[in-house]
Length: 144
Length: 144
DNA sequence: TCCTTTGATGCGAATGTTTGCAATAAGGAA
DNA sequence: TTCCTTATTGCAAACATTCGCATCAAAGGA
Image (cartoon, rainbow over all chains, first blue to last red; front, side, top):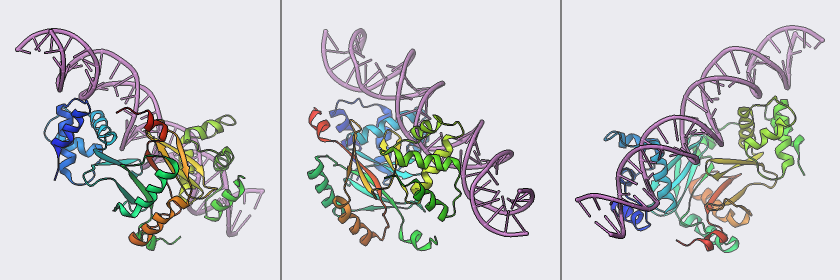
């Protein structure tokens, strides 16, 4: 399902240059399937070549996010994950206790987002954000 | 409206010790009215005394958040803000372009949160999260 | 009051991420 | 193809935040 060339074409169409580094980064996250940290992306690339720098990885991932081609979300504890946005915008439920991540489906939140867009004139699509809380298991095992 | 003593009492009731540092931090953010960064909290305290360390500020703010007495939210660009949760949980709309922050009211999102709690058995209250997007002004002035 | 326990602090180092800047190279023009 | 412009890269430093650990002090008991 990955569409590396579609992503690269979109970048080119937006006037960005296609560099070997950008190609590698796009290929890695498009094929990986799950969300990845910038560090993980760099390690995957380092398995093949050393001509990649962590700053470039961060800059490219940010570029993809800004152009709607990937989503970024906060895993808590100062860590950030990225994934291509093949399946459209989404919301992650991040458990504060065990760190588990559950993705919710669009329809569960879209009514509220429609409302926000109407009331506040704020454009929040494509959206990708995290709600931090407690999953069932951690809530049940808590004793305070 | 600040309730420093209420906050401090709650911490004590939870078994935490009340130190001069914690008292100062609670007093500052309770009186400040708006959200603040950890660095800002420390500067305010440093105006009076030097016996405060940034790690302590972070730890105390985290403690308040974990106990539902304050909320933390991501301003984008790797910065985090804190505020006492006098007015209950809330959601911030953060403009990716100009950085403006708008707080939305509970009712605009609560139906969706109810739904999430039912469907995913995930406890997301008291909630405090940010939705990043574009405010009207920045959307209008964008030319891409 | 003084003592004891153990949670909190300060420090410095580590981590994750961003930024400034000089060097490099992508893509268009000639 | 070669050249030129300027976006992109790599590097190192800066920044925001977290962590480990030795020291300190809050709170309760004697």
